[in-house]
Image (cartoon, one colour):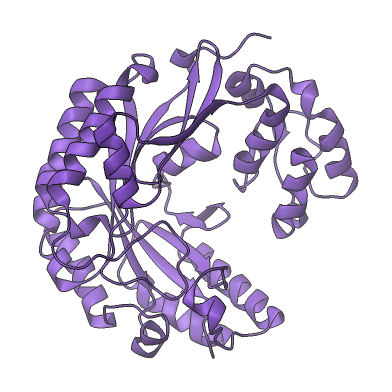
Length: 384
């Protein structure tokens, strides 16, 4: 089969803003604290230059979604996002119903900017609540309080946002299943359209890795997760991806594009991209540190790496994304997104079905309940 035509694939844009007020002790994301004033003007200039350089790679497609992630993008003023969106519309084109998400923390100063973000073109906020218990927030090293989190949601509604994601963490030090459900009840009282549920894990090269807190044992965490997902289902949220739950019609379109192996242009420090060209599928990765990114962008190309994927990599790359979706994807999507025949999946698929990890329906590539519980093992079959 020939490579897929770029025009047949949806396009998204990811813009990374790597700055934070404080590095959380559990965080292994590409985020950086900085003394003094943030280099907002210089960073905007670098992102705009990168976009001008790479816009032609998108093949004339309009972007269906834009996601400003971090770090803490809401440390920047609304003018930054308005300028980037204006450039994107001119250089690439934004769909009339483009979903534009901004990650934000609940600090009072950031919440005060929500109306300006809405005016700039942002229409979806993802707020890092993490917990509505002040003791838990302190143990997580968060810089906001539960009252500030509730205030941020109120400010978002007042600013006109009708599409909110709220992040919630579980498996916290000393947390019981009952305590986690009580935390979730507080979150549900804020009436979000989307909830992202994350287990606290100890990641390498973090403060918690050096000084690990005492976390609940595996059985308690498993009971906690089951109780939280049951309560979310009762509240009308569909569990559509490993960590994500949404009310009907409110799944994050940007993230679904990743999981369905669509294309995305990655801009900013440490941003990754995946773009289909006439020659194949290209992966890009920018320099991660903000200073290295700014320097490289000023010299012309902020990419630390860009390469075309080999055909042998595509089954694993596709499965790594698609199998995160609770309902999986139509089997034919593999051919549509990779240009390879579906029989390239036959070997790992047969083994996954034998192990009870994959639904035997030949028209879908979907994990079973067991497959979702042992997702890493399932994906590894395709990576191998």
